[in-house]
Length: 282
Ligand SMILES: [Cu+2]
Image 1 (cartoon, helix red, strand yellow):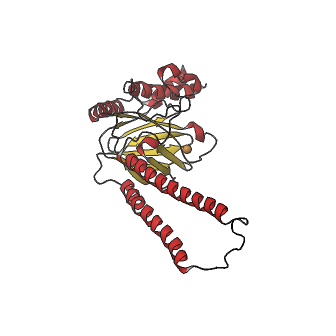
Image 2 (cartoon, helix red, strand yellow; image 1 turned 90 degrees about the vertical axis):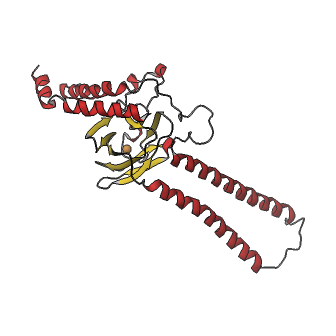
Image 3 (cartoon, helix red, strand yellow; image 1 turned 60 degrees about the vertical axis):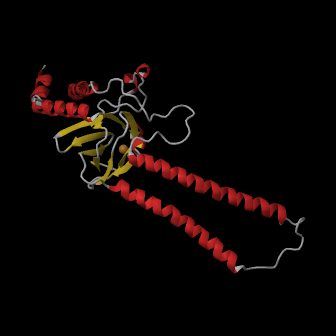
């Protein structure tokens, strides 16, 4: 490791040490468990509605599939050559044709109404309590709190630093997690510096593309405190699978304390250029 990269690692570790105090013993309410069925436990109003919508679609899909399967079986039994040697010569049935056109249209409308309602609900939030900006880079995330002048990088932890015994997960841990308050409307802005990425936390029902030169927006309100995981979900190059996302959702009071600490640390940051020069001279 060169001295310069050692310097930056040290700088990152300083950030970790300021953040890790907030990482102790957080539950992982939405983490998948072996043999789990269904989606991750929803931890935001959007995710709850997404789960409900998914369950509603599952019922419709199941009913349609069973109906088509029943028709197929009935036709195969009732109208095979042996059971029905003289086939009907009918080519049209106006009533039947209207029915099999109208019913699918009605089904699609029934699906479209809640779908669009949810899309607009996910789109943006009036008067958010907090705004964060998520910037995708090849291959890590940068988080900014524009209102507080806080900005830091979140890099994946390499395999040899993963502590399985402490409940850490390979390919899912980062050095500096994003700290967010629960029960707060959080506006999330998305952009990228190089290529397309997609910041995704399944438990929040958030997945949006980070597009260079463009700002996308959505929002979340975390309802359950804990540690949440996600991964980049837009193919972004060779290390696409190595840019995990970790969010620590803490109470608004804890978040406020963390925020104050970060702002104070910002003010006292030693001149990084001087520290770098001193290291090179050593
Ligand atoms: Cu990516």
